[in-house]
Length: 113
Length: 113
Image (cartoon, rainbow over the protein chains, first blue to last red):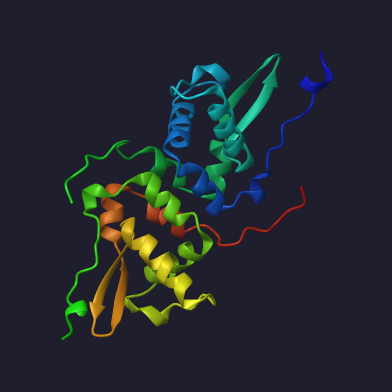
């Protein structure tokens, strides 16, 4: 196993999660979509499993932002990363938030002003 | 009554509220504090009633961002504005969100990494 595969990705501890940062992280529609897909998955997903039709570098950025805010966990598995939602940590620190964010209609109908 | 006092401030309709924008609006600690103070008030509050120790122009900015995202309602009342939380609209569009955002501890203890 190569050394770089042994480097553990940084994840903030549960107590370090901060509401403003989590809200900011979720305020991007693409990141919100990633969270929804992870919430609907029974197991951790490999990087390529979520397709948003954006550049791979954009996805990498979104995953990093989500991980650093404590919203997702990423574990190296060989040459890929397995990603999962930190549902327990989020529910513990911010009860009801994830459920509220996941439950509403994705795209409300635009009405003329 | 002067004409400028009759101009109605723009508020998005309930159906126009969008989750990413609302989350972004709430991702600022000062705006989150404003929302908490409004949530705890029985009646609409005049501008000066919320003191965050920041410049008046900063407060004006925060109120505008909150109003344009549909989080608060501002009504002119003579030379001041009365501000209230759009709790019904938020609860209708994003059930549980406001409760989740208002309920957690404000400042989690920082733990060493």
